[in-house]
Image (spheres, rainbow, N blue to C red):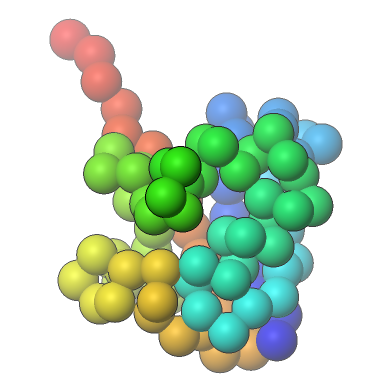
Length: 91
């Protein structure tokens, strides 16, 4: 299955400047793992040591927050779009 992973600019730099990646997987976690395999520097920014999403990084699957579904176990379908939104802090 081909899933498009949309990266913010700060993470795109770790994926050879690409902001949209075509990846494969059956679940969100599979897609994230595919990205981490293809771009090893990107992996530690997407998931913790246990392979789970960071609390401060939000993943949206077709505009739905995966935290309200099954997290990285959320199934994906061909053509889905996964968007990463990192937390922004400032004052």
